[in-house]
Length: 296
Image 1 (cartoon, rainbow, N blue to C red):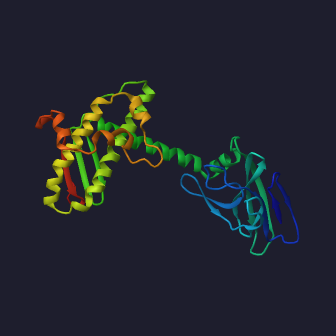
Image 2 (cartoon, rainbow, N blue to C red):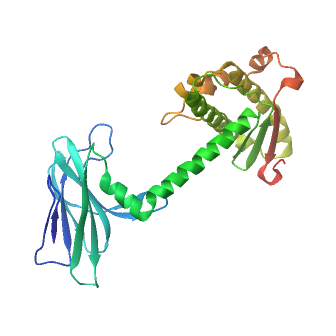
Image 3 (cartoon, helix red, strand yellow):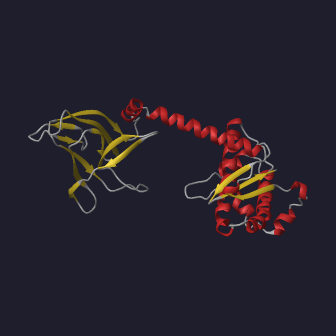
């Protein structure tokens, strides 16, 4: 059998009913993308998405520039997707199911649909609904949203806890004032702020971990972490606009808190901390312990 997905989609039967050849048009990867059109993959649903197992392609008809047609061989049951060129500037994805009544028997191929780039992926959404992927994704988003809100609530209470490389850090008496902005901005920014603070402390803890192996080194490091926490609190007190945190939310490749906290906190010199004018009672409290001695 032969499934051609170049520009149009057509299924033709031939003298090899137990084998399906799928033809796709291959193009070079567009700027900013790792791969261009021209692949065939078997789809397996997992908790929140589909896993794609890409099949080997016969690329003998693809030229040096990366243009041409390629074919994949399918002889097992499953759900598949073929990516190919649809128009000069658009790709399309053809979804199909392959069934076989018995080993060596003829394949039965059902074309499920064809989603064109820049249009609603109706076929993919239908498959997600069929396998419960969309519901699982919604549940995962809900769990993530709840976790982000818990983190934001803890920071508003002045608390932040992190674990890294066998160490536990608990910071209390942080000051995180309410934010100004629209309700939607504030809800978003509170979560960004809490994630930045937790991520920043986790990064600092991971960097210090190789030197923190016993009670003596932990005791010495506690004062250093208290100084860092004091400088973090200073940023939280000064930056109460929701847009500050939204505009400085981490981008791809950023370290946690790099855009919102790092430049204001690092390096945490004694002069910086002294300039805050905090009394001992106003300093954040830090508990630092090995994982086996987690503070309660």
